[in-house]
Image 1 (cartoon, helix red, strand yellow):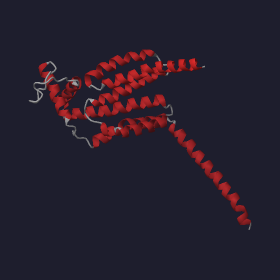
Image 2 (cartoon, helix red, strand yellow; image 1 turned 45 degrees about the vertical axis):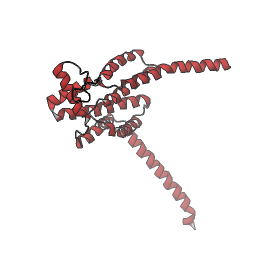
Image 3 (tube, one colour; image 1 turned 90 degrees about the horizontal axis):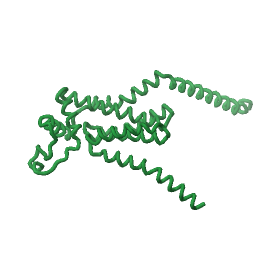
Image 4 (tube, one colour; image 1 turned 45 degrees about the horizontal axis):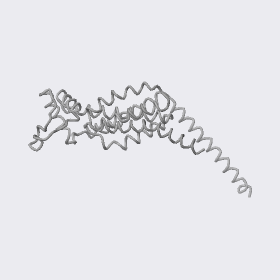
Length: 239
């Protein structure tokens, strides 16, 4: 009877001890998580993980890379941009706008200098740059370090299937840059950062036609103050 009577007391004591143990463990993990070396290792892993996965299974599987290199080679040989398609009978008499000429020259130059290793280096650079840019964008919106790392890791995994040595990856990278600048200025940081946008668009427009997406994003942010003032004026009139 005394054992049954003391059972709830022992159980309550065990629960309190377990709770204290969990709290000690949490404090220990938080202390480890605050260590600069641990955070540095976490960022190194975050920045390199997708690149290392790519290296492990690397192969030039994207068929567009070859005509991009052929176009770059033609431009370097003729010191001009083709206005018709020099690689097919169908396009020989039809206008052709080479909107990714800067990428074509770049990837051909890398291949001429380093062979397939050059394409691999380009692939690695894209993986790392996207990871770094995306983390810094997330960090500006989510100050907690580990939450930012976790959200960035999930995002990188979600877009990992679109990585390829093609100019469209510039759109991913430049969109992150542009969004980071626009959000920073919107938060009240120096408007001088906006002067970086013309440089981004000059590079973007000569690498891929999807720079128009960036113009659309810029339009959204430019239109937002008008929407806010319209709502404020409407509420004032209603009052």
